[in-house]
Picture 1 (cartoon, helix red, strand yellow):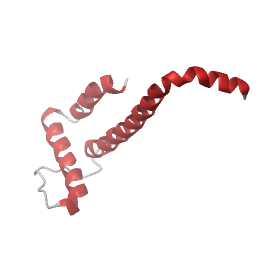
Picture 2: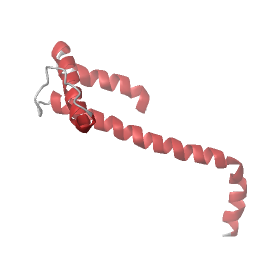
Picture 3: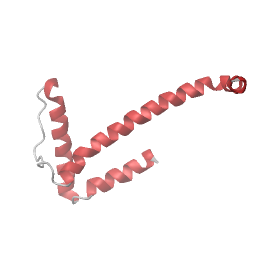
Picture 4: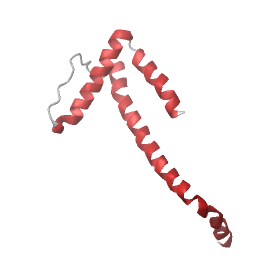
Length: 102
């Protein structure tokens, strides 16, 4: 235990950096989760697990926000995949996300 106290004495100047590291790790976990959540609707449309949405959804209020978001993501992916082929949204997502996550 005595060695641990000696080591902690050298770590005191880095307390601010340790707290910033914890905050950065929380943001990383949050944004990684959001990235995966946004990827699922695109994969569902690309692999034909959901119906393609060809008309832009209409906002009906805050109570149906989740449905609106899912329909809008399906609409967006359907619109993009129809003009450039089904692999285009996946390729563009991987191209733009590679610098962010590596």
